[in-house]
Image 1 (tube, rainbow, N blue to C red):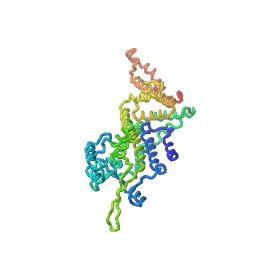
Image 2: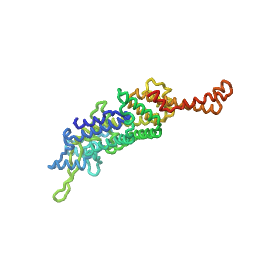
Image 3: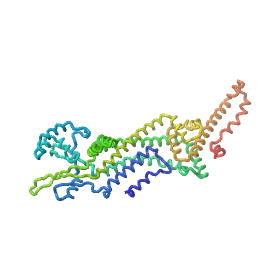
Image 4: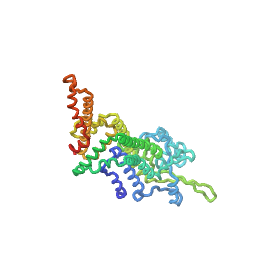
Amino acid sequence: MYAAVKPLSKYLRLKTVRIYDPIFTLHSKCTIVILLTCTFLLSAKQYFGEPILCLSSTKHTEYVQSYCWTMGTYILPLENDTIDASKPVPELALLEHQQQRLALNRSGMRALLANNEHYARIISIAEGVGPETRGVTKRMYLRYYQWVFMILLFQSLLFYFPSYLWKVWEGQRMEQLCCEIGDALILEDTYRMRLRMLTKYFRARFSAIHCCYAIKYAFCELLNLIISVLNFWLMDIIFNGFWHKYIHALAAIPVYDWNLWNLMTSRVFPKVAKCEMFIYGPSGSPNVLDILCVLPLNILNEKLFAVLYVWFLFIAMLAAINILYRLLLVCCPELRLQLLRTHLRGMPKAHVRQVLANAGYGDWFVLMSVSINVNPSLFRDLLEQLYAEHAMAAALVAANSKTADIQAGQDPDDDQDNGSTTSEGSLTTAPTAPALNLPVDTYYTESHV
């Protein structure tokens, strides 16, 4: 069994470059591994035996079992499936009083069963198996039994879809930006080369591309929530009211009420069921065979789906919280600033604010993704480079503005000192303006790199 499940552990290994946040990883990767593991367990006949065993009066046992497995079994549901087994049935006291007055012979028992079918099911051999009136008694067919492992496979594909979609949309952007610089120790040449490439990339300002990148990721997170809600609806239909019935079974676990556990789980995953089969006699008259079937796999199903019940609720709540968190990040620039500073220990807050001054949510999202996948020292140097560029750009703008004022004959310094502007002052300061208008690449080449 471990050999069959072992390849799934490779899927949970952390990649060198991470493109998912922890909640996305839980929703896609962990859920897929859990569902595929349950599928392998249910399909392992050598560990849990035959999926169905039937008892009937006919000698052709294998034929009967194949017929019931193919055509499906059924149980007799109670009129109120949410009945609490710990509380006595209101009619039970009256029926017990009637039973005391009846003779305990066959005719008396038949009269009792004919008098109240509900009480007859209570004293039947198992939950959902008992006497019935053909054409009158309600039946609940277990049509999911043959397809449980297929249902789990479909769920795994459903939860894998957002992950696959994001891989396609992401296009290995993070891997191209962050390769070779995620380790603690990096070669000096690699460090300088990758720092120069990242600086050049973020200097280019792909704001529209980054915005589209962040929107696609948010859509995949929303898709995770939609799939979780859709999964609730599908399971409730397939398993005959799974979500509102199984909550009573889970409530019995903390108090160790195993009678209530067996009663409530049997309404979703019955261990014993009925099967009806017609056999025609030599003259063409039909005979109805009442067959009792044992469903061994439901012993495993009830426990696996108890775990899945809790897990699906857990990841659905996480997906909803994650959507609210994403909306808060979009609406709150100050929160984005604080989150980015957690990866920039010691860097002044004013410097980070200056870098993010003209950056939108998409630029911040890409910066955060890079900070998770690169060396912390390199990321801080990257932000310092970007801050120096902003400072240099601001200085150039101020110098150009001052040059324009001087050429127009309006020197602010002379206005403050003398109240008038001389032409000699203009001629003196004019030649210094072109010296400040240096290319940004020359600045970095000589000063930083």
